[in-house]
Image (cartoon, rainbow, N blue to C red; front, side):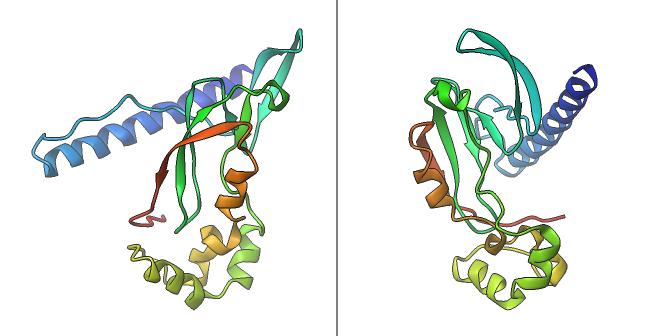
Length: 174
């Protein structure tokens, strides 16, 4: 648990540093005329002791994220699909969890082998999304490799309430 928590904290420190640099760049471009809300910290792939149904249990959230009552969270889509800011409903049957995102329908290497590069490029171009998808190796995160995010969100209406739908403007892969 100590080693895992070290890794979770290290990842958080990196996200804080990246966010600080992004905020600085935005402030520079916007000449300081922008406000930022509090950082939303969503760890990925971790375990924590929690109490459910009168017992302390070790909850491992892999492909899942916390969805406590009233707590805000992020459910990302894939390249070219919506992401969501959600409010948790605190459903104890799911250990107060919800999906972390759309979830894959094919692995990374499978996506690179089987998805059509031109189809995935057209999907982004048709939506006016700025991207640098140029080669089959770029297809590991393509929308075609993931489940339909709208279906995923519809299937967890008892876990979260959608607060904001986010449409992608650009895909940065690297």
